[in-house]
Image 1 (cartoon, one colour):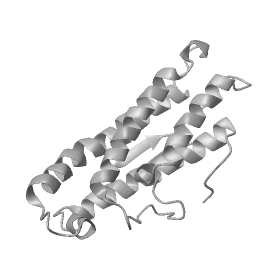
Image 2 (cartoon, rainbow, N blue to C red; image 1 turned 90 degrees about the vertical axis):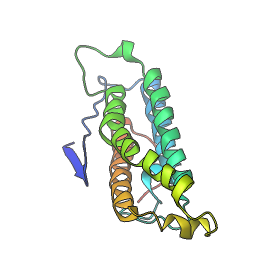
Image 3 (cartoon, rainbow, N blue to C red; image 1 turned 135 degrees about the vertical axis):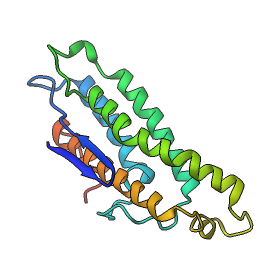
Image 4 (cartoon, rainbow, N blue to C red; image 1 turned 90 degrees about the horizontal axis):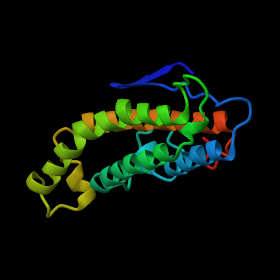
Length: 174
């Protein structure tokens, strides 16, 4: 798969199978990552939102926590990947792909927005406003959501690639 670019993020999804037949360990790690992706709207957006721009009903501060929690879960899955079974110099296995996703998409987004938004939410926003209205007052909300939509779109591509490469059952078809 070619390099995907959306907004300010770029990701090469060169996931390859580790030989002819996938082991149960390989597929289990892929399934665990897929399950995390497909159950977190904060990471891949709402199921029928193809552009990943629908934030209706979301509280951004809670979704940022979910995104950070996904980052932590991805790290756990990466550690469990059966690296001992990788033959030769294979730099496109699932563990490396998870690392690329973390380094090229998740970490830059979280570093740019998590502290900035949280600081504004906790110290500068009006706590008397209804939370959904309150978050719309974030001075950089347009750029924030633009970047987040790009992240979600890329993560959805990762999700689709996992289904294709690891022959997983797709639980949310677009």
